[in-house]
Picture 1 (cartoon, rainbow, N blue to C red):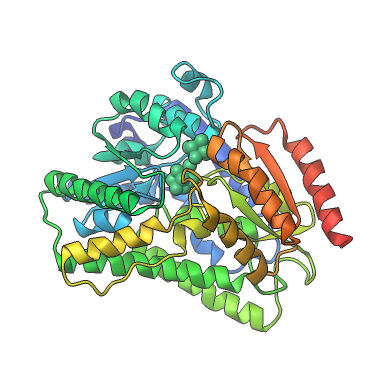
Picture 2 (spheres, rainbow, N blue to C red):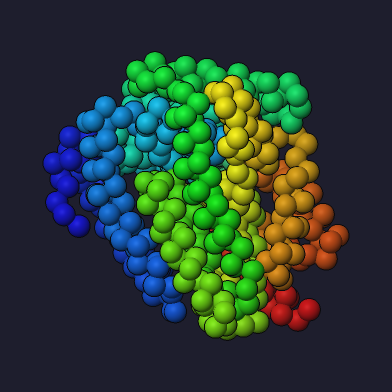
Length: 426
Ligand code: BJ8
C-alpha cells in the first residue's frame, strides 16, 4: 500500500489508533482469507480491495469530493443508493464490525447495546474510520429502538447528520411514509449537491444499482452447486465490499468471478468436497471485519451456501423497475423495491422466514444457523418463531447469540460442531 499518512491526517484520523487497527485487520485477513484452499482466482480483486480498503478507495472518494461530488454515508439498506447516485454522489456503507473503542462507546451508551451500534460509536470516537470522516452527510434511519435512540446521541458527533423515519408495518400507510421520507431525502440531496434529480439521472442510477444486484443474484445462484464453488467467507466478503466499492467496477468484478464459478460448477470443482454439510446463515448483518461466526462454521467441516442478511440476499435480492419516465414514477418503483426488505423491525414479518425456507431449498442446505447479535431485540425476538417454523418444515436450525468479542469462540465452535454432526447423521 502506498503512503496515505497525509490523507488520513487531513481527514482527522487518530494515526496511532488507526495504524493499530489496520495492523490487526491485515493480520486477521491474512489468517482467515488467504489461508483458504482452492479459492477462485477472481478473489484476487477482492483481496486487493481489502488491502487498499483505507487507502486507494478512500483516495478515490476524497478526489471525488474535491471535484464537488457529495459523499453520503449510511448504516442501513433502507437508504437508497440510487438517490445518491442520481445527484452524481458517492454512497458508502458505514456499519462497523470490529470491537473497537467499546469503552468510549459505553461511556455514552448503555452496556447492553448491540455490538454493531457500539462499533459505530467506537469508530467515530476513536477517529479510525476514513469512510465516516469523508462524508458530507451521514444518514441514520429510525429502524430498531437501539439505532434510533443511539442516533440522538450520535448526531452531535457528526457534521451533518440526517435522520430518515421508517415505517414499522407493511401497510399502505407505511408505504406512503416511506415515499414521503424518500422525497424529503431527495430534497436534502439536491440542496447539498446543488444538482436536480431528473428522470434520466434517476433511471441511470437505478440501472447501475440493478446491475450490481443482478451480479450478486447470479453469484448467489451459483452457490446452489455441490461442491460449493466458493466459500461462505469469500461470498460474505464480496457482500461486504458491495457497500464500499465503485459500483461499476464492483459489478464487473463480481460478473468476472461468476464466469469463473460457472466453469468450476461445470467441472465439479469446489472449495470443499462434494457432500460437505451445507448451511444457510440467517439474521443480523455482518459488517467488515465481522467474520467470526462464518470462520467458526467453515472450520467445522461445513460450508456456508447463503446469507439471509442485509449483508447478503436481504440486501440484494430485489431489483427496481427501470421503466418509469418521470421522477415520481421511478420513485414509486424504488419505494416498491425497498418496501420488500424484510428486516425484523417490521411487525409482522412473515416473508423473512419464507425466504429462509426458500433459500434452504434452492441452495440444498442441510440446515440453518440463526445468528443474532446480543441485545438485538428484533432478531433475537424473531429467532424462536423462525426456528419453530423451519423445524416444522424439517430444516434443522441452530440459534446463536453472540457479540464482536472472541471470548465465546470456543463455546460457539463446540455448538456448531455438534450441530454439523447432528446434520451428518440425518
Ligand atoms: S434493514 S437489519 S441494515 S436495520 S443488530 S442495530 S437491528 S439492535 S442492523 Fe439493520 Fe437496516 Fe434492518 Fe438491515 Fe438494531 Fe439489531 Fe443492532 Fe441492527
